[in-house]
Amino acid sequence: MKILIVEINDDISTVLNDEGEFMDVPTQDGWQCGMELDYEPVKAEKTNTEERSGKVKNFSFKRIMAIAAAVIACLGIAVGIQLFYSNINTVTTYVEVSINPAIRISVNKNRKIIGIDGINNDGTELVSKLNNTSRLSDELAQIINQAVDDGYFAGGNKQVSIIVADDDTVQAEQIEKELLEITANVLTERDIEPVVRTRRTTLEEANHMRETVDAGVNLGMSLAEVYELSQWNGSSDTLGVREIEYKGDSIAEIEFSSDLLYTGKEKITVMDSEGNELTCHMHSQSDDEWNVEIDSIEEGKIYYVKIEAFNFDGTPMIFTGAFLARRGFEASALLNGSSSEVLCFESGLKFVYDNKDIYSSKNTVITLRNSDGDVFTADDFIMEDDYWLIYTDEISPGDIFSVQITGITDDERKDIVIYEICKALPGSNVTPQLKEVKFDAENGELEIKLLDKIEWSGRPVVTVVDSTGKPYKVNEIDWDDDDIEVIVEGVFQKGEYDFTIKDSGGFSPDVSGSFEVQ
Image (tube, rainbow, N blue to C red; front, top):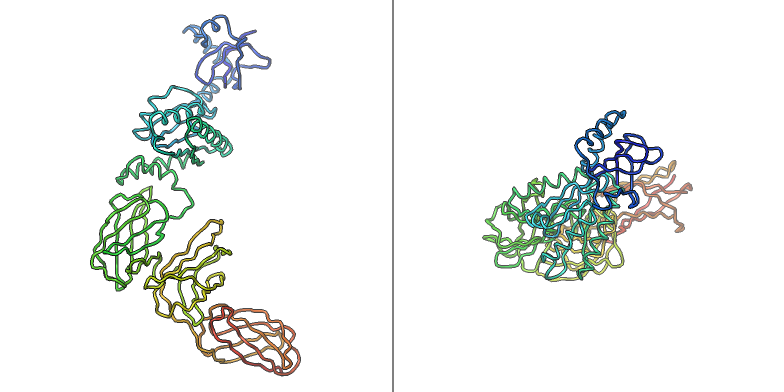
């Protein structure tokens, strides 16, 4: 325990412990009035009166006044007492436990409980059944056992969520590990398979969390639901539309990437490709899936969906997506939006997509679905920094189709899925014509200008050989759709040199030409 020394005599000193009680204890060497230190009493130190009663000795009013006078006489003791009381009454850690009952425990820097409150009605009722204790571990064990007794774990395994809020990250980690172990042990002893989630946060974030709970309630959510979700809204999972599928009978099914509570205050807008708004309303909903009924929908047409909802702190969120009104056809992206573009060549598709933080593997599979609902797998593919080359002869220019790419991970090596609805735009399949060729023998710079702009499926690769077929090293400098600049090393002899430009994606025809060194 923590004690504050308030009076020193020859053999016995009077101290104030962290429970706010005065005690007489044996004086130890080096003690001085006003010291705050750790102290563990032993049975031998108790007086006869204490041994009989088993309690801390009571002090008369006169004795307390005498002690107070002695305390004030010690230099700086008044400040010490104030700081001591401040320490034992200041919250340094919050622990929030959520099963169905939601409970907040307030703890001081000495790991002593100074407050416990029910956050929802079930939590308040459970707290009323607990025995008072100052130890956090004992209190949590009581909470879990009482929740089991009250039937909250009946009918299957139940998850326990624990948040530790502390600005001291080292202490927060220690508390988190201790509480995780205690919870798992209690549930195991009660023949319940432990499913425990823990998270650490700061005191500021914990207080903000309480504000978000209140905001959620104001939006019409139940307290238990919004509390359970709000404590995990710091998750790295991105909330968005996973896919939209037309189910027939004017019903579009919208699936979200994670749970999104429906408050009844959301606005859902559906528009056709010409910008006309259709009347729609919520048909049914669950945590991560909404079914919207849309009037005047026509088979085979593309429709855009916009959902205006609310975050857990009350701020608005907007989700958008598109779908083809054909049963069984599903995807989740704006048609030819900023996220992707598809060019169709004779050999296949160039799917323009930011791949810098995406990694493919031997398990990567690309699945295409055409507007008739036919599903097929791409024969082969190549992944570059900002596009995929998909080799297939199943898609033609103008076709509407969906692309699903699985077996890929993001920058944190988490499994992800690309799933989009697209329209194939015509790529360039004509043989490129040369407009101008310049070679600077001094620095070896070769510039090749094309007559028409070329939609390269990959990168243009230039090779150079002399009249005998000897190859020369070519270093790429820059290129765009009608101008390529490279450095050719070792070209010093006079004569004619041939070059060839190949599309690394293999979709565009080769370009050949020559230049002369004087």
